[in-house]
Image 1 (cartoon, rainbow, N blue to C red):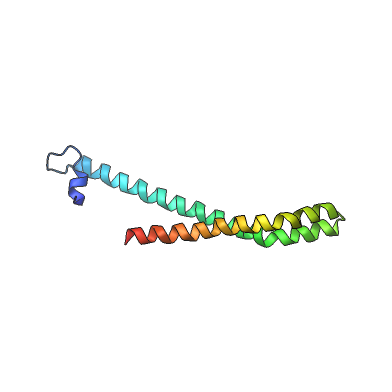
Image 2: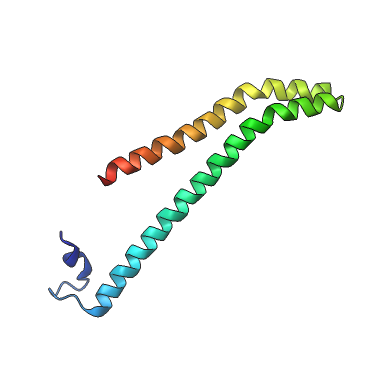
Length: 104
């Protein structure tokens, strides 16, 4: 199906100005949706990586304030936390590369 056939909504073989504008609006919305999706995924990745870097400091801070129980709990949670964050970041990069591969 060619681009002109996609634009011809009523199927009469002619692309009117209204059909052309509707098609352009649709394409514009798709581009904006894709951009906002990428931005949201990028922000999520940055926040996840920031949390990974700040997590050890939270253990140190709890120890400095004498909250040894909290430090122990944070240390026990670190295994699950790092694996979960790594999965989030890996899925971001994995899905991004798969999406790029589909467009080629």
